[in-house]
Length: 322
Image (cartoon, rainbow, N blue to C red; front, side):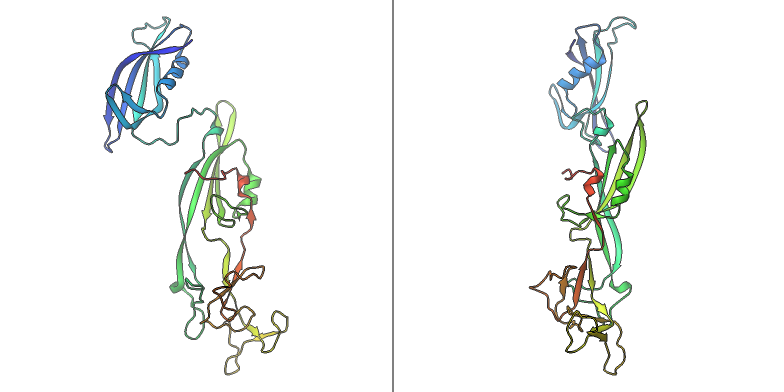
């Protein structure tokens, strides 16, 4: 119950308008039992010429043409219809055209298909409150700059993953949509990957076997999805008062005694000196730039607004293919 190669019967080559080369080769195989069929021949073909192997035949060699999964196995043309068959013609293809996935392993179960990955960028425009150094964007009268002139284009790398699943995890999707990673993921720190979109499709395989094709989209921010919010307000710390106590703050007045409006605050809620470097403080009150920030400069508050979740519950890989 085996097959062996008799020899090459025919070979042709086509080249398309993009310059890709495709070779069609026809081999003569013979089985040692009349009860053997195309599957027995296929096993020997895959042994002698594995899928993905380069085109090498005699003196011919094309290192960029690889064997594809496509082939036909038919009784030898000298075999009359209905007669026992031990001789087979196998036509196989080698091509320089790219394949949609690695085919070195034959996959029958759609749930074993590898994850497909693609990517692009998400572009948004946002009004900026500070310049690249964290200094508040103010006019000469200390009013904040607003409008299209201070909008900046922001681009987030987006990653799309597609894979097949035996079930539809709709409850997990609802739980994690728009959440950020609660632990390092794909080489990025926590809170740098956001689950933004999901598409799914129910597919029939075989007779009564259904599975789901899941497509997830993630945005990535190599810094963080946390917000850095300048501290502004109408009230400032009263002279001689103790910071952070209710009643220690009053509406800021101008030189004429009128309410001044919204002003930039420092780390204790006093009137900030816009010429001093800003101080960045997180929600726990920890100063994140103690060596470069000034307590008299503008206060920048880092806030974790987006909720966190374990994105691996979606069934995505913990590492991306490289």
